[in-house]
Image 1 (tube, rainbow, N blue to C red):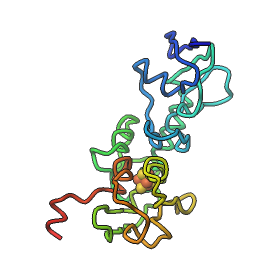
Image 2 (cartoon, rainbow, N blue to C red):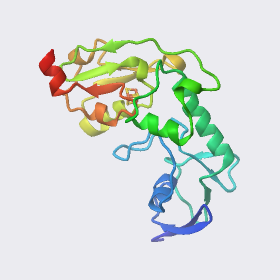
Image 3 (cartoon, helix red, strand yellow):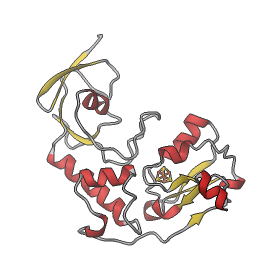
Length: 214
Ligand code: SF4
């Protein structure tokens, strides 16, 4: 089979076997927000933000890890999928000590769902500020980490440096560099792939200007 036929929001589309629902929707010009997805990495399906409705399934599915099948009927406006995804983003936002910077992917995703960090329905426990500024080129603000895992995968899959690790669970989930001794002492090669993929600015590259002022 060279292509399969699916339906996206009432429109027929043809995709190659092996295409994910997210890829198909985006190729058709549709929008599905994501948080843990980076097209440079293998899909992870952890954040539950890219949920869509698929006819015949008992509940919403993560579009980034679901492969298209012949005859599949996809609804990107499915109310349950939207509700699940919005609640997930709201929970993530509620744990941050302040609103994400406007240029970040998280800020764009929150805006897409109409969520405002300072006006959430259920403001919850927030992370305390914890910074690691020991690395010469990369700054880590742990309190902004939403545990999407993108930096860890970028480090492993893209760079092969294995300098970052996911740690903890639930509210305590975060990342650690090396054996939690910090970036400077880890196997980090300063490629910046982690900062490049981070959707919240929890990891950022220190600018040349800031370096000159140190
Ligand atoms: S530091 Fe950034 S990329 Fe890494 S897990 Fe946290 S939010 Fe995701």
